[in-house]
Amino acid sequence: MAEIKEPQKVLAFAGLIFIKDFDIELALKEFKELLGSVIKKSEILPFIHTTYYNKEMGESLLRQWVLFEKLINPDLLGELKYKSNEVEKKFLNENGGRKINIDPGLVSLSNIILASTKNYSHRIYLGKGIYAEVTLIYKDHQFRALEWTYPDYHEEVALRFFGEARTVLKNFKIG
Image 1: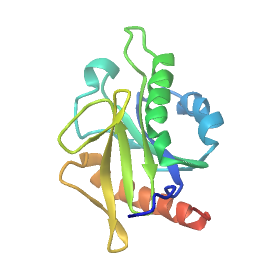
Image 2: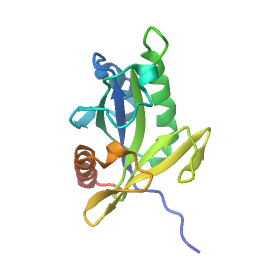
Image 3: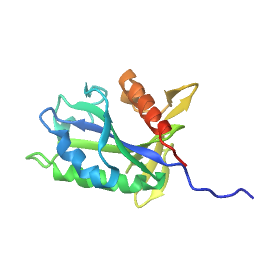
């Protein structure tokens, strides 16, 4: 019989999509108690891969990924999604739409996992309305996209950010 072991600790990240004039630091400080400070940020890019958010948030949206400092257990992913939804609701525009979309995820040595409230064939139900998706895998010394990976996670900026985030994690003593 296989022995059940505690999983290796991971680092949390957030994928941010936000309107131009929004100060993302207001939203990020809401995660400090749970995840610590932001220790790494990607470049800010125009969010151009879909118009999905335009009706709610407007056009000319921006995209950035941020990495948090605390090592956490992977089973915290569902709680992170609840927290991100709570934070989004604090920053609404005059029409009730969000100024920021926050997609939490986990950086492990072998993959990048996103949390979602939406079910699809490739997602695993975690409980309490939350699903998990492996969105990038680490293979041949780099992160690689999968068939269902969102287009912006294919971009060089994203792959570089997650590669650097993995290096940060690797430098921790995890177990």
